[in-house]
Length: 317
Ligand SMILES: C[S@@+](CC[C@H](N)C(=O)[O-])C[C@H]1O[C@@H](n2cnc3c(N)ncnc32)[C@H](O)[C@@H]1O
Image 1 (cartoon, rainbow, N blue to C red):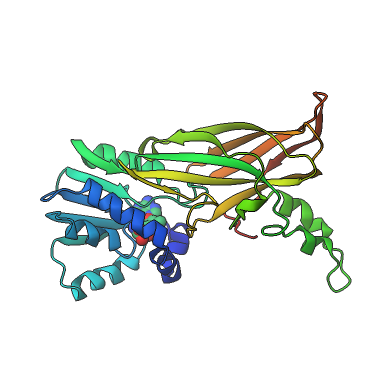
Image 2: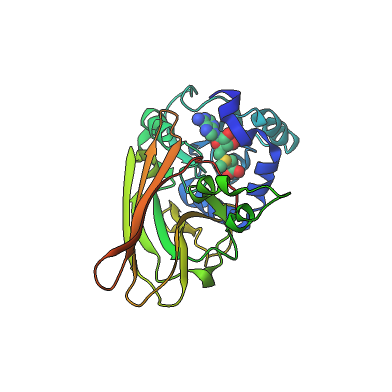
């Protein structure tokens, strides 16, 4: 992992943001309590501030290794020392290169980024567990489920009006196509969702598929406006420990993502047909493509679209 690839996790602000995310922390604490048994040797992959490694020690682990590629580990070590915690060793390394004295009882990782895939950790995590987890060992998270639901994002996540207006007498509309194909991370207001969420995929993050073809179709309410789909995930961190990033669940720093589709004032019998493709490059960077159209009551397809995200890390609302 180069300095560039370590990206935002070099900055303490992101770690503060994650530590202040109460829904996340509550779920992760429950995951640690569920997975760790007294005397276990545990690995926290992507330990960051070392918080989960310390929680694992408090849960009775005999030894905990926390691994992180970011230099934040140097500060996290000081935190462990300052709190006089014994038996927690923090290792500054890419997980792919980290060496341990032997196989371990538990491996867990808070490995979820924007749209679940944004932290690009799943492939390496699977390899890491293959190498270091005992055959009867425990690991988390166990499953990630992806949900999609149509929405009208004009009031909470629509940068288009800004780019449509002249600015200092300049026409900014040439920027609009890029805006249309941007994946935005925003807090979706649940009262602006249409129809029902659809489960489009579920997978084990330690054995993540090489690509996804997600398909969904919804009957839409006449008279409302549709211009985007909201995208979020649910995760089973451990048996019995589930956390949702749905707009109707307690809010988390992950918020939701929206992918824009052509805007339409909906007619009776309209449906939205959607296909989302997710592929990954060698660094596991996710790329999103989505296509579809509005299927009308007479069986035709209006406003067909085919879009490709220009920037997988875009977070512009
Ligand atoms: C979502 S943060 C979680 C931090 C911490 N475990 C927590 O829950 O607050 C993911 C962490 O994984 C680290 N990371 C990402 N890819 C990694 C890799 N290939 N090897 C080691 N650490 C990695 C990042 O630097 C980041 O600190």
